[in-house]
Length: 385
Image (tube, rainbow, N blue to C red; front, top):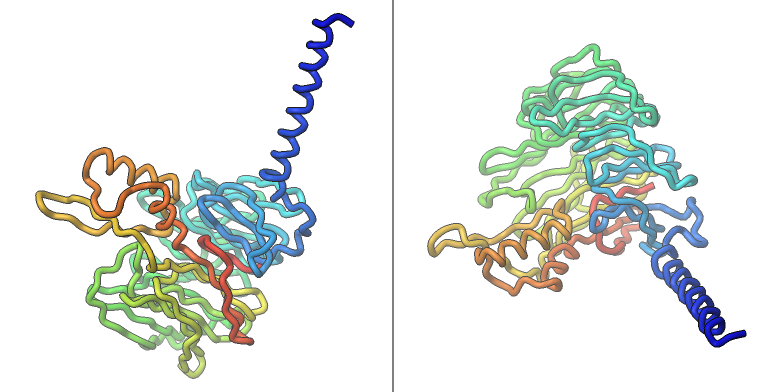
C-alpha cells in the first residue's frame, strides 16, 4: 500500500474516531436527560426554568428537560401535560411518545376541565376573550366575548370568570351566562361542592380576600389590609392565589408584603384561618397535588440580588424591578442594551449578576399533612402530578 493510501486510511479512521467521540459526548452531556432509566411514572412535578419545560421527581432529582415553554400544568389524569410555548401556542405533550401537538394559538392563560375533555383559555389580544375548546382536537365549543381568569366547577359542566372586575358564570356550551357578584376581583376559585367562591380584590391602597356564597348570593370580607407600597408585576402586594383543595372546602391563598410572602389555609365552612409557610420574597403561582397532600409554589428570593437602577431623567434614577416572567435571554439583552446606551447604573452588568437575578426564583414543596418543607431547585410555575 502506498504512502498516500496509508495517509488516506489514517484520515478516514481519525475522522470516524472523532465522530464516534463526538456522538458519545453529545449523548452523555446533552441527550442524557432524555429520560435514561427514569420511567414516566417517576415524574411528579413539571416546571419552567429559563424558558424550558422540565420534569423531575418530587425531590428535584433526575431532572430532565423537554421543550421550550412559559407555563405548564399536568392533565387531570397525569398522563400528559399542557403548556404554553414561547410563541403563545397552547400545546399538549404526551409522556410516552414525547411529542407535542398544537391545541390553540394566541393563548395567555388556560385551565383544563376536571374531566380532561375541555380547555378554557384566554385569548392573548387587546380585547381578551375566553374560548372553550376540545382538549386534544382544539375544536371550538363556545366563546365568551370578554373575560379572564376562567375556573371550572368540579363537574366540568360550567365555569366562573371575571369580566370588568365582576364575577360571572356560564355553562360549558356558553349558555346560561349569569352575573354572580359585583366586585373588583383580580383572581378567584370555586369550592369543589360549587357552593363558595373565594376571590381577591386589589384596590388603591389596599387588598382584601372575599368569600362569596353562591346559593345565597352573599359575600363577606375574610381579611383586608392597607398597603402603602405600590404593587408591581414583580411584587404583587396583598392577597393573591386563592385555590381550593379538590376534596374539601378548605382553600389556600398567599399574602405578599414588603417583608416577603406567606401562604395561609382557610376553611370556607367556618371561616377559620391558619398559617402554612412563609418566605423572604413574594410568592407566585400555586399548585396543589390531586390528593391534596402537597402544594408547590415559586417565590423570588430577595437575598443577594444585585441592585440595578435606570436613569429616567436629569439626576433622577429608579430601581428596576424584575418580574418572574422575564426570560434570561431577554433580560440579559435588555440590561446590556441599557448599558450600551449609558442609562444603566449600579452594580456592574455581567453574566454573573444577570444570572443571580433570574436564578432568584426558587421552588418549594410543602407536605400539608406532615408539615415538611423542602427546596426543589430554581424554576417557575411548578405543577404537581
